[in-house]
Amino acid sequence: MNSLTLKGGRPLKGQVKISGSKNATLPIMAASLMSSGEVILSGVPELEDINVMSDALRILGAKVKREADILIIDSANVSAVEIPEHISRKMRASNLVMGALLGRFKHARVAYPGGCAIGIRPMDLHLKGFRNLGYELIEEYGFMEGNGHSTIGKEILLDFPSVGATENIIMAAALTPGVTIIRNAAREPEIVDMQNFLNRMGAKIRGAGLDTICIEGVDRLGGVEHGVIPDRIEAGTFMVAAAISRGDIYIENIVLEHILPLIAKLKEMGLEILLCSSGIRVVGNNNNYRPADIKTMPYPGFPTDMQAQMMALLSTVRGTSIVVETIFENRFMHVQELRRMGADIKTEGKIAIIKGKNSLEGTNVEATDLRAGAALILAALFADGETRIAKIEHINRGYEKIHQKLLGLGADIIS
Image 1 (cartoon, one colour):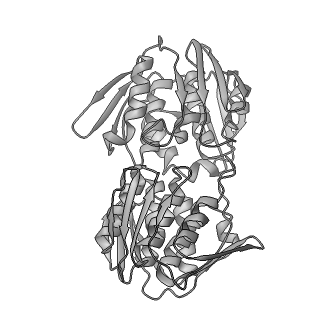
Image 2: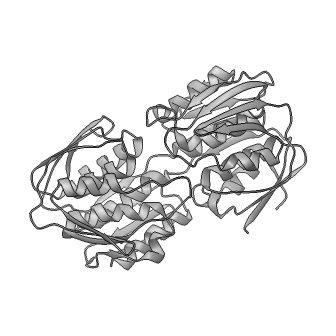
Image 3: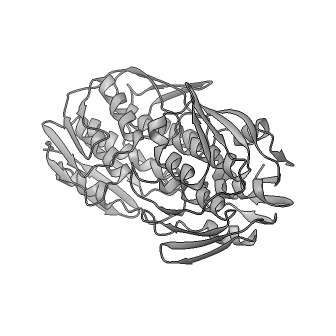
């Protein structure tokens, strides 16, 4: 199925369980390449990106087996150090194997990655970090190749707190002699989860979640069992689903600290949010929401991965809201599709001005990327009539069983 048709106007009600984090699982899977033993991951979501990363690990020689939400990875016999282009083009996170391979083998060759077309997302910060550790880097014919003969821990200052660069440098440094210090590091919860995973394998890493991370290189890493953190972006998407459908959803399997920026913004808009012992309840049956201004920022600021979903919600709120996107230069691709549904949105550079309306109209739209697709689903929940969303393969990259979860909440899904 490559399209999804929803009929709007029905408040979502009930309970939904959040899956494990895709953005935590992918770097942890890459880091498993550094283990000389067996890695057992639990809470792994069933997503296409996870399948692509599994294929990448198998190409390198790892054994990967899935049992329900458990992934078993044995990298003991990994010997290959090249990720081919047809794998890299499918997923941005394929670049994360470079840090793991450099750390373990001091050699890696990886094709430039693909993924959602939301911006350039250059590899320069990754490569700069590798070079600071002593790796020689060659970029040619669409590949990045690194070799390390005399690597040693160094102090690395990132020009921008890039999540991917922080993760890649941590992996390379974990098996590099000496002490590596990363300053202006990204602070996302997914990086903390990867630190915890690596430390359980025997790494010596301190400071994840802060802007300075210290890594003391070790000789080897062993096997481990690890549970992946819940997906904060999926949690946020269902919070907005409650708001835009004027529904009432209890969301379980969350880490409250990870979604505080969104909780604050929704409360500012007039949503009722109740904190419970094992989850959060979002009551959105209020037609008097207030407009809001949003500026995406690195964690712990408002997440860029929730910008499109919030724009869908703000399109249904009377008054003028402003959204400023500071992370990616091409992350307003959903605007044109929301306009097809009647949203009043104007953009200039990194700024979007939304004049909310009481209604949207169902029509044919297209998911241009993962989070844009989520925004269109949310808009369809509110819109009059039927909305057909094409290219939902983008959505399936990041939301496990979203069709079933929406049905369980009472969404009117036609196909």
